[in-house]
Length: 114
Length: 117
Image (tube, rainbow over all chains, first blue to last red; front, side, top):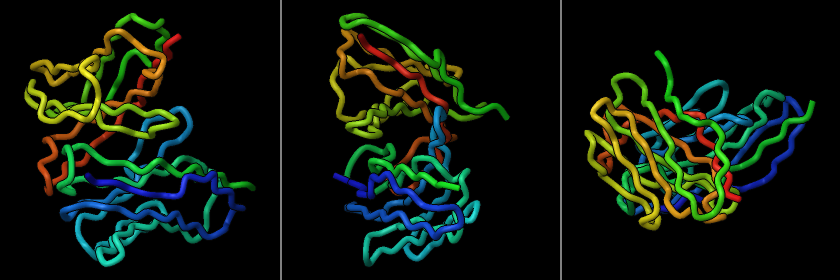
């Protein structure tokens, strides 16, 4: 079946540091890829998405590029803020290897220190 | 436009009891999916409903069930609760169901935190 692998953390960075959260996937088809963010006490919010190879999703300074050759969708941000502290989930859909629901990674807890 | 609402937000039950959780999707959305979130297993897909029919089901025992009403509101039920059922249960709605390669963006509610004692 489909699967998503990402570093679990916690990842601790200082404000204004560069962020990379790695995400790789396994799918039998050609999935759509997503990054969701979960702030404390809240549900998931879609951060960005890419639906085909070489697409770049971007939102709120975050970016991720769909790399089919390396089956990756790494999340990056050039300068993080304390308000970016949250749990980030990489996910896929439509990979052909399971139910039509989203398949999530375990989540990466990001802590930004002032 | 109002978001996805879930009730109740918090629930405490004891082993052996049953529980019903409710989800109201965004107006106009006809598909509702349920997910279980635990520290150990992460986020796992439970099932998806569209037009009052279950379209897909994840790998969960039959104690987990759901239904959808004609107004697209959905409920999920867990019978004979076990300690391991303690989790955050998230509901997500989309205009149409996922159809393999054609993904329809899901919008998540805040979740219901279930604690089983």
